[in-house]
Length: 130
Image 1: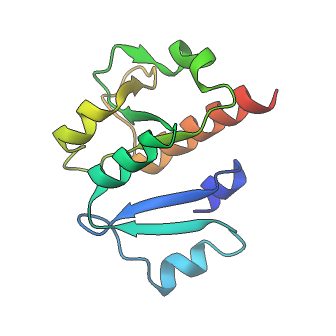
Image 2 (image 1 turned 45 degrees about the horizontal axis):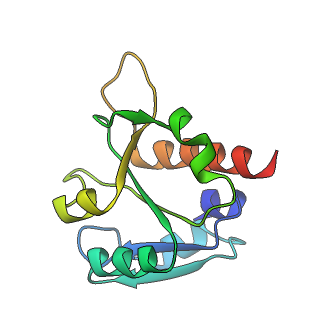
């Protein structure tokens, strides 16, 4: 949450299924992070709703053809929904609804989800603020 707040993110959507609970530990770790948290039971419907409101939807996918560097012009001053998967990955319907992007990395197959999020948010922040 603090990472998202640090880069000006207005809200975070967390699925009720397959995610950590938002409990006292999470709240304490997120102190001073002024950010909206929305919990959903239907990630696909939530993403579809945001797409209808003009959001560009991306999902992090290590096998995606496009990298972060390929979407420079697309993300400038845009409303973005970034979908991250955990150990089980991203559900197929969400992948179909979104555009896959990858972080160009070497020597490892993937990154920890929170590290990948931080890299993406920093990239989006740079492209929209400088």
